[in-house]
Length: 219
Ligand code: DX5
Ligand code: ZN
Image (cartoon, rainbow, N blue to C red):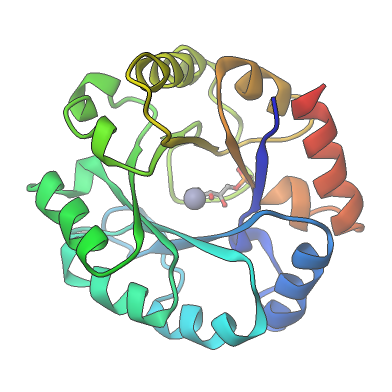
């Protein structure tokens, strides 16, 4: 099975963001994962639409924006205007999840729904046939470099089976603690996009790191 590799900018050198993006693009990354945190939904703060807009002219990669913010409907339009290709919101942060997903589609981006490790898949079953991507967190969101939570693997598999059984094309994205050891585990479970922060930006050679992840996942 082929997988897509989405380096997460969270682990990049924030003083050299443009070069970091160029490096992973040259390394053969498929998407750029951008982690937006508000210090409220998660206990950390990163960046907003202004940064996405600043990087947009310097990359042809798909911008995969992961919103870890409360009431994301307030900012969806701003991130799409800034150049997000995919906007993913957390089910735990949306009172009216379907309305937010429709808002993302209406503004012209692909939509995704994310689940924390402890959130059951059943909470999003009604909307799974409507989304372009389901993001399964394999760490508790907020920080890079955390340990992969193995108990999420059956949920990754259940999401892949659910989508396959209904002929849905949505991507199954896994985020958190993905490295050469865990990449084959999530790929075997049916993940189609692997987010990797530390495993890519923590490596001296970004290209070798992206290659190693892809090889590990595809076997
Ligand atoms: C965590 C973020 C992840 C993070 C992954 O809240 O959503 O995208 O950057 O980092 P690693 O790959 O280091 O676990
Ligand atoms: Zn993320």
